[in-house]
Image (cartoon, rainbow, N blue to C red; front, side, top):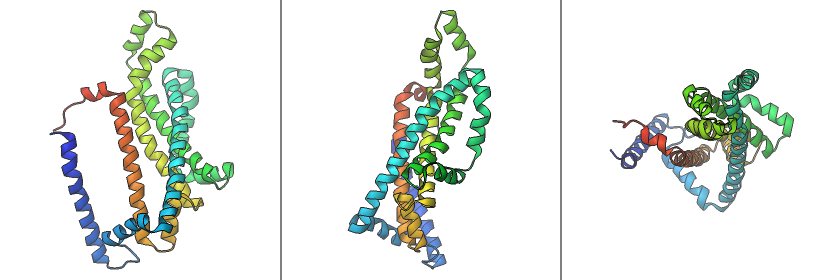
Length: 261
């Protein structure tokens, strides 16, 4: 079955089921202070684009949030990919960095909030820093695993033909690790979104996270739900962009994948 065709059929169906279950739960609870239904949330979502004050707030918040996400993710990619490659390639780097990477990776995202506040204060810079901290170690671990598991025969073959260390790295290791790099980046963009939203909800009043927190504090549950929908659209859009880049970057790997029933 064609994947795009199947998705066009299945996705609306799954969405309809989700909305139906949501409506049933909201009707059963029948308390708008505890849970609002799809209709009220949909109305609030429309108001984000039709009510001028709300539209201005959302546009400003969206700009701040997207800037923080992309900056944090870009910094994490620039730092994480080289470190992961070096850890996988050189034992001395692995022995030095591995304990620190695992320690920092295991720390819950919320725990980075006070650390970022102490370093950069209460600002958008803190959001970027938190996004970087919880993203970079995800990327490092995925890239490290890819390099470490490269078949030794590939490298030995390059050495036998007189390849230099630079050629081995650029012609053998990096191409063979590219699928893992792309997996790390795809996971990393989700982690960057998580970090920015946590930061904005905890200590800032700007961004989509700040707007969500403010709406929840004022018991504007419909508006809070509408902002969650906006966040879901952002997450889905960035995930699809990363999937597209992955298909282009490792098309040879995609063509070798098994046919799913």
